[in-house]
Length: 221
Picture 1: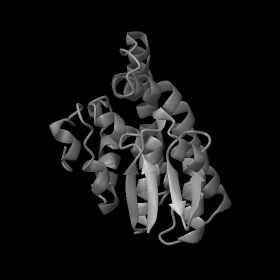
Picture 2 (picture 1 turned 60 degrees about the vertical axis):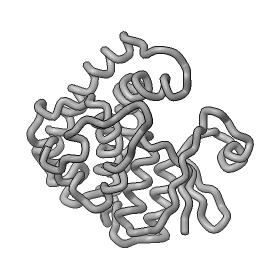
Picture 3 (picture 1 turned 90 degrees about the vertical axis):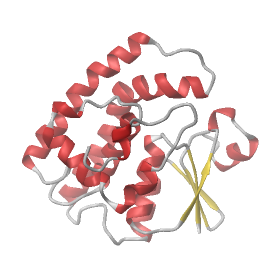
Picture 4 (picture 1 turned 90 degrees about the horizontal axis):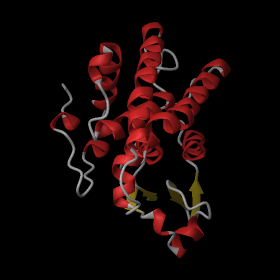
């Protein structure tokens, strides 16, 4: 069995968890307080970040690299398109969410509201929270534009791009920071992906001191 060292609300960990679940790979989840920089964890990943996936004694790090490893070792069901163009677009959008969306939104909402308290790093920066709340509107509009032209974010099939986006949005939805009224198209997309069996463990997450809103687990929210 694989072992994943993770943090429940980390979008990078959630992306890997979704890929594992979609491919029906059994995995043991181990919560890791990576910010404490435990010596054992630092040996697993000197970068001091999660997720880390243990496979046959080896420790794999960096969420997209892990997902690519899973895609090569467990090719079915495919989470990268068969065409060069499709794989490019998928990787582009994964980078969009894990880089641009993370820096403009996730880091300013989830990390300010939750991570700072959990890590005992002080109080949320109100300016950062305000900036994140403003920036997410642009990203939701961009997603709506993509989904107006495609069945899924990167094209006609569900890909890692959808999992990357859903990983970030589900983490933010846990703290009620997504205005689903902004786009019915995006809401319908999320309802579809949220209903997949792969999402069950994500919806079961509980963070002490931060109970999720009632709609978080509702598939017909």
